[in-house]
Image (tube, rainbow, N blue to C red):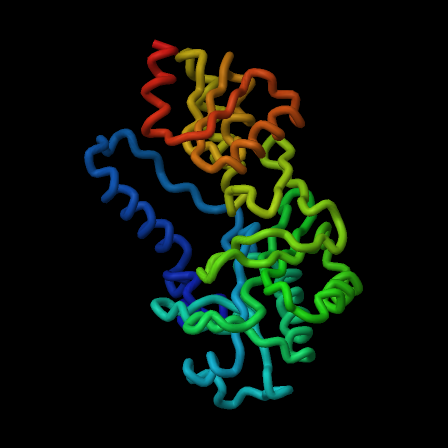
Length: 320
């Protein structure tokens, strides 16, 4: 089978795209069974396919690269180069995290995301803005993070670049003119030297700095650091399955939503229980979960910040 993505094998994204989708599911099921070898086989359910197997991710973190990356990776041959400091966006090849291979036709997120990458790369190339070099921690441009509401059509674009980055207002103008349903555009200054898309928002060019997504019956506010299941439609399928199980169950009155993130599972199942207890180590995720409970008029859920391993025994003791 020919991979559907032209970048397959050169980037560190998809791993088994050369296999038919049915074979991919089989390999994933085998991996799960290996890790759950102590569970009786008769308790296993079949693996459910994703509703979509392309353009399903709602979040991607792309890194900036330049001609030096392409030269090292051997990808300059036969490639037309416009401008001496041609910039691209993409992912790190497997095992080569200091390099970035272009992924302008990536099939993971959306066609709109592909166009946003191209506009941003053209902007950076036109202004000859240096990309961040991971070996010596020099340079300005690090990441472009795109988050999408697959059910709402809203979109957040977040540029991670140093404070001395020039002409960010020009990028904002280009993206605004292109009109790819970008609800909010942010400029974030990265924290430290690690190659992670984290930092403090320097400027919100338009929008509220967040957007909204609907998961099942629940509407969520998605901020730059909010956790959200990356495949929303698969998550909704899982929540629907859980609901069918709840209708058959006459068990306890409390649901413990462990590693709850922003509360997607617990809030969707709140109608089946008297109490929802969500536990999560990330404090910003807990704040999001509390806001989401209020926004969706869920009054029987409480969310606690802390380690599941430490807090779960304490809370179990209260309910047994």
